[in-house]
Image (cartoon, rainbow, N blue to C red; front, side, top):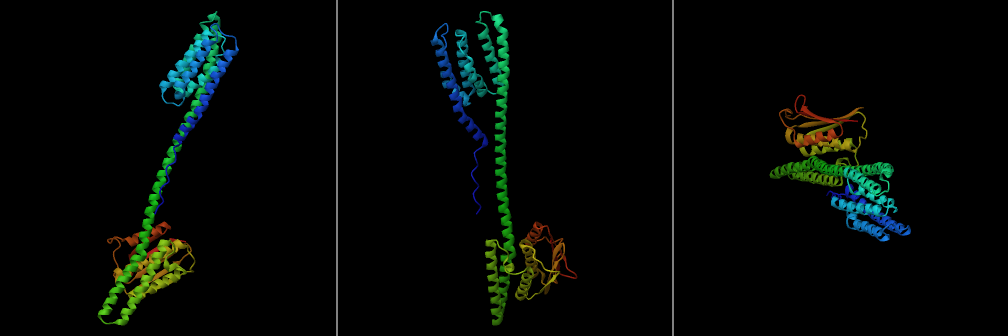
Length: 404
């Protein structure tokens, strides 16, 4: 059974949003701290023309506006809260500047200007900064005793403030935009990786099914075919009252069933084929040909050319399966009386050839069966190939070549 896929990780965009929500408390603390500092400064310095009360009330009004609208604007809950807060806060600070020119209003600029950029997108933030500075210019110049003389200095201050504020705000917005873009890219990568993992799991399941189907066809199905053929032969011998032949066929059925059981256990354990356990490939081929000869009466011989050498488990499994498939077809379809298995160890390749003297078939007009397709797929996985054609002078010739 395949393990269940892991639950999807939290989106990076959600993590980024959660991080910004976590940073909001510092925005709140900083705003309230600056307002409190402004109140303390207003009480320390000499009172304005209208006394302390109007200035303190307006500062409290800024704090109240932030509590009602500003906090929600910082959380990006809606642009209406940002507009409401900025109008209230700038109305209060401009009124303070008009009624109390000596008040250190610049203290609140440290929170009001950043809040414009924190609560609006880039375009509205630029407009808001310009409008705030224009209003500040008017509130500074108009009440002055000499407006014409105060205008140049105030204008230079407004321009410098706008450039610095816009530069800082655009820089911060660029960082935020890049962070959001990277979060989206990470989310897309995670999604793509999850899709690829799903596809790989599905492909793995399909490959495993194909492997098992080939293993079952090359082992259990052929073993059951042998059991059926031997049981029919035993029945025929029983009809002739040939008890010795019946006992011999029953013994063969038992050995075939034992071998099939071993193969089934090997498939489950994903080990090497039963014929290869504790044997070399050459020994396994000799045992296999002897078994086929004994069970079918077809004289099967095996020979080896070159110096045998270990090939690795996969290559030896594929070669053994090739012989099993070829001999199974000889047994079921060819009507042959003899067959030969030749294994050639060459410097660059391993060549397996299985021939018989049966009726043969036309490989062009006769479609290949599941066994041959599976055999070709096994060989292709190792960079080899399988060919099948008519024998000379008759029968069938199957050749499998694998690279060394």
